[in-house]
Image 1 (cartoon, rainbow, N blue to C red):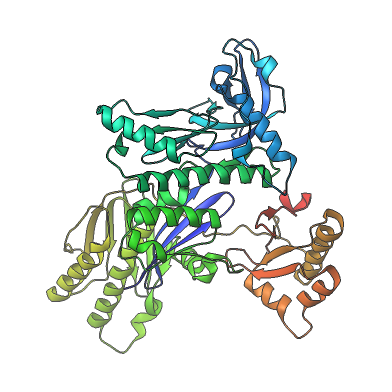
Image 2: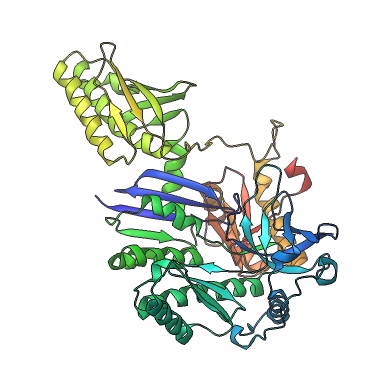
Length: 524
């Protein structure tokens, strides 16, 4: 059996899929900015000054503005601000951090009015997540925590954890860190660093320093504000932590930053497996390439089809999950009723075990299998179900078939139940029930392309459409796509995407950032 992990990194969310023999068995999806996790670093704008509180409110992209007190700005706030301006002054060449000058410490008895102005850009880190009606709490003193060390930019001190009691060891660590630490950086040595060799500490210090450099590069290259420039623990790594198994053969990632994170994580926990992490650079969406999108759409929902026309009906009630097994058109086969029922039930047991993992259905699950007369067939079905459920990480209990042909299963919930809405809202009528002539759809696309190229000035972009529409646009020697390229430039790329509904479209720029081209009538 081959096991593979596919990670799809989008602007707003990260999805991770576990495949066994190319079949989807586990699927997790998590928004990237939903929780505003502690440790995340943003380049944000000051929204409102509160002189009475000696604080300000900062826009970090959360529905409520984040709170930043004057004393939380950090002693090196002036140094950060100067370096931030130096970085943003030149979009092509990054101002090296080693050359950054350290300014005098911020006065402790100063006021927020004299230090900050409304609209000013600041580098901030989240120290407290949003709770109830309150927004996140921020600090201006950035830190990058690793397993052994904590890196603090614009600080020159080396501190050792007070839990390391040995004076000799403390002196060793202090001397060691002084010799390897980057310029303009301070380091806190954590308790677990006791007894560690210089190579391990140096390797982690380089990783932490790289995180800081990457964050600054992101500040330089992006103009959108507020902007997330560093995630404390990458969402992908957090999701992978639950799923990782040394038996995996491949881990595919479609984002360079996340690829490096995952590769680093795998090299830490299983160094011999670092080579299985691969960067996916194809133009086709990664889930489409591995046939995951189609499996998601066919595996979630009330009805789930499996082999030879048989299907499951899965219902969720307040007390339990109910599964009905139906043979569909299998009943027309020549083989006897008992053999047919056994075959359908065994297939249902295989599919159900997959569905339980995929949807993470917890609590009581009652399955209505097709009635079987022979006791050995019922026993075979029970054993098949138990065997299939061995791969499940969640604790579970399976009872043999009852007199009514019902199987009762209890299963522990590992994470919130996964529910994917596979129903599609009509992208063309917007609930009205009537659409424009579909033959004019390509004309509508061309007008969008014309506006994008000639008015907005974006000459290289990717147009994602339904596979049927893509086939129509690409058909023929002198295809519609070729005509567009000759008219608007060869930066026009048309790609098929299985996640889109028929007559739905999405535009992305060269950096894979979504471009909203919907007109007012389309958003109603």
